[in-house]
Length: 371
Image (cartoon, rainbow, N blue to C red):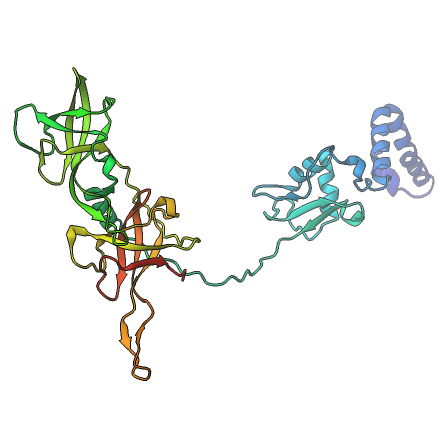
């Protein structure tokens, strides 16, 4: 008779079946004591109270607060950063149910351990909120045409008279020609021997620049003719290869170390008060306008640097006061703006970026007001 039949039989047989049902588990326990102990432990574990909320004692030593959530972080990573036992992450999640997915933490959240934040497992989370910053509008200076700058700086320069013969000069060529151009080989006399690969500017002196204030020579305007690279040296003679030529190069043309041209000219407004004058206009012209090159008597020693923005002012006209009958000088008139390209110690070459009237030698140069 099977067990189902015992349970279903009436009377004495039924009582026997119930006895079997009650005795069978005890017999199984006696046959498998280890399984019974395991089941007992699992039951006891289920009946134990929930794991204690993390405390300050559970923290790792020397952690830096707050912790900023990074892209890819999970609660496991954060718990491992804060606690000695990273399994605390589940408890943290239970106390922060606003986190719908523990594997998706938003970057930028700040997480700190706070003793008073007991309900959140000791961790307090600050969600970063967007903020509006109001700043005054800034005017962006228009871009400077670098092609004009390169052309201006490659073709001319302004030097002190004592620098005219400082470096050396062109001596001759391999084939005894009079004029030379690009890719021609030449011989040079240098005041100081130069290493192979050194580059020199080849220039020719022009008229001296006269200071309009004193009437005395202030410096020499020079015209760049090209560049030469040193290829050898023998018996006091330096050999070179002309790598660039703007005009024909001849014997006796002067040399000076090549200038590095910075085409990234950023506009700058000097803070110190400046007062100078226009000394030179390119090609000895009588007047200058927009996009022309001029020379001014302000240099690096005055606080001028590449990119300095200055205004050009013309002396006010002298008119007759019809009421008093006296002659009156009107205020200076702003007639243009310039940007310094190549400052020397006492003078600079500048590019006229704006003009409303012709600019002449002697016109005043002053600070420009920042927009």
